[in-house]
Image 1 (cartoon, rainbow, N blue to C red):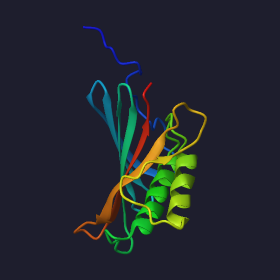
Image 2: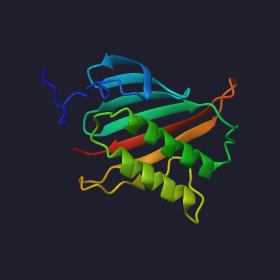
Image 3: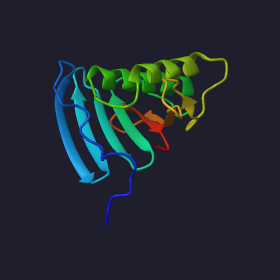
Length: 158
C-alpha cells in the first residue's frame, strides 16, 4: 500500500552538536514520528517529538531548574515556553517552524492584558499558508523540583 501522506516523513532536527548541547539522542518510533532528547548546558532538557501526515506537529517538553512554577501561573508558563523555544533555536534545529517568531508570539501573549490560557492557539505569522500556531499545553513543577512546560507547534493541513 502506498503512503498517502502529502508530507514527507519527519527527519532528525538536530544534526550537529552546537555548544549549547551536552548530549543528544534520536529515535524514530514509527515511520511518521521522531523523538529527540537534548541535554543543554545549564541543566535544561528538551524532548522534541515531531510527527505528521497532513499536519506537522512538534510537541516539546522542556525541563529546567528554577523556582517553583504554579499551575495557576499562566504568564510564567508562557515565558518558560518562550525560553524552551529559544533553547531549541540555540541547537540550530532544522525545522519548518520559525522558532524565533513563535518565541516572540509567546512573549507577547505573556505580556498582554489578557491572561493566557492553556492550549490557546496563538498564530505565528511567517508567510506559510495556513499560518502555523503555537500553544502551551501543560506546566508545573515535578517532585524532583524541576519546572516543566509542554509546548506544541502545529502547521497544516498540507
